[in-house]
Amino acid sequence: MKVKLGMVTIGQAPRTDVVPEMAELLGPAVEILERGALDSLSGREITALAPGPDDEILVTRLADGGSVFIGKRQITPRVQQKIEELEAEGVTMTALLCTGTFHGLRPSQPLLEPDKILLGVLRGLTFTGRVGVLTPSARHVPQTEARWRGYGFDPVVVPLSPYEALGEGTAALGVSAAARTLRGAGAGLVLLDCIGFRRQTRQALQAALHVPVVVANLLVARVVAELLGT
Image (cartoon, rainbow, N blue to C red; front, side, top):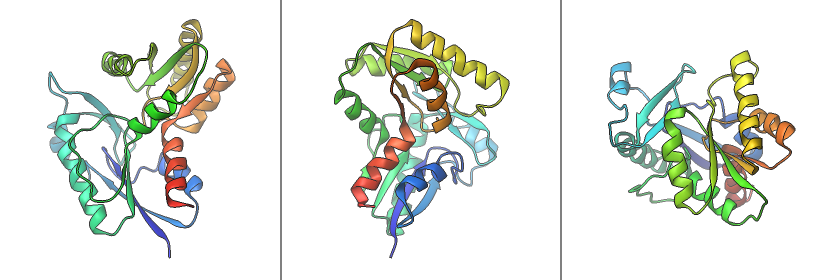
């Protein structure tokens, strides 16, 4: 019998951009059930969840491949609702598909929160240089920098959208520019701080920088595999 694993995105399910690569690491013994906090909402309803003046900015992927900015305060109750739905379907644990920091979630089964996994890995590593952090937009830079400084790091934060195809001209130029900035700032390790970043972005950055690059969704999948024993 397969083990049921829940995955909750703050956008719309299925996350065909990242979940297939995660599933490869989890193996055939795991059945993935996906839910999205924006599932079944109209465009107008999604627009109403936009960040307010004092809200933390999140960005996520829609089912049509587009992306949208939403406010964390607005979306958190919907994330909780989707966790409860998955638990009612018998999942053994749930993985949150967002690297943002959430407060007030109340799971009845184990819940894996990527931001805590990322922080634990960085605190368990000793490396030379600064921590480089790729954040998904220029709007995210101030809050991302404040978050990682609050954790005790000296980050160099660079905006780069994970929702543009890496092979496209502007996206490829964006990766090259990000690599130059990170190199100039002395990054000794790079964290892709959005669940939407994928393996090919890591490969491009590692080829340019020759330092470790952490892909959040793949790290989450490896931790889940260990927890489930797959």
